Length: 382
Image 1 (cartoon, rainbow, N blue to C red):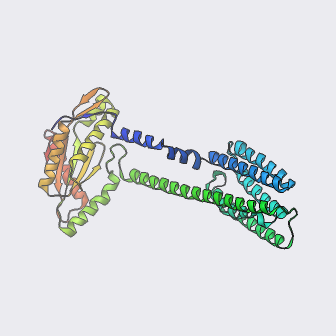
Image 2 (cartoon, rainbow, N blue to C red; image 1 turned 90 degrees about the horizontal axis):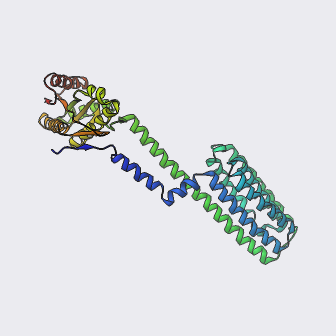
Image 3 (tube, one colour; image 1 turned 180 degrees about the vertical axis):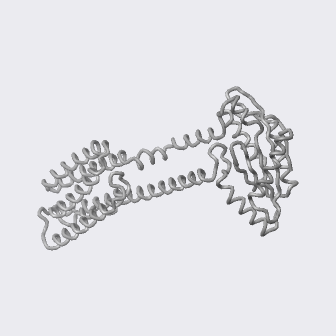
C-alpha cells in the first residue's frame, strides 16, 4: 500500500470554500440582503410607496381634488422619511404603525371625497395579511399576534363603516368618470401587486426558516451522535446501535464482531509534538478506519484514542478488516507543520456469541486489545 500524506487543507476546507461561493450567488445575496434584512426590505417598500403616491397625487391633480393632492404630497414625504430614516435606523415599530395608518387614512379620505368607485378601499383589504406578515417577521413585534389581530379588527370595522357611509352619502368632490376609471384600475392593480409581493415574501421566509430549522436539527443530531473532532459516531450513540445489532443477530441468526482499536504510544505523540498534532493523528486514523471498513459497518470513537467498529460479518471477515486497517495505518504518514510521523495501531477482535450482553462483548474485545498491547503492539489479536 502506498504511503499517504495528510495535508492541513483537507476536503472539509474545499467544501467550506464551495459553500461560501454558493452563498455569494446573486439569488442568495438578494435573499440575504433584501428579503431577510428588514432594513433594506422596508426601505425598498417605503420608497415604492412614495412613487405610487406621486402617481396618485398627479391623478388627483388632474381630477381636481386639492385636499387629496396635498395629502399625497405629505404621503410622499412621509414615505421618504419612513424609508430613509426609520427603516435605516431599524425603527420597525414606527414603520409598522406608519404604513398601516397612512394607507388607512388615505383609503378613507379618498373614498369619502371621491367615492367608492375609485377603488381606494381595496388597499384596506390588502392591509390585513400585511399586518400578519409584518407581525410575524419584524423582530421588534415578532410573534405579537394580538397586534395583528387588533389592527385587522380595526381595519375591518373601518371598511364596513366607510362602505355604509358611501352607500347613503354622495362623494364630496365627484371627479370625471375617466379619472374614476383610471383610479379604479390603477388601485386594483397596485393592490394586487403588493398583495402578491407580500405573499411571496411570506412564502420565501417560511421556506428559508424551514430550511434553517432542518439545518439546525441536522447540526443538533450531529452534535448528539457524532464526535466533533473525528466525525465518527460517538460513545453515546454506541448503546443504541450495538443493542440493535445484537437484537438483529439474535432474531435473524446473523454473525457480527466488534473491533477495539487503540493507537500505539499515543500519549508519547501528544507529549512530543503537542495535542494539535495528536488531533491530526486521530483524524487521520479515523479517516483510514472509515475508508477500510465495509459498507454497513459502523465506526465509533470509543475513548480518547480508541476506536470501536461493529463489523457485520463472521470472525474471519472481521479479522481481515482489522488486518487491512492495521497495515494501512502502519504504512501511512501524518504531516503537520512540516513534521512527518508514522504511528501504528493495535486491534482486538471479538465475535458475538448468542446470549452475550453488549458489555461482555466489549470486555472480550478489550481483553484481546490489552493482550496485543502487552505483546508487541502493531498487531491484530482475534
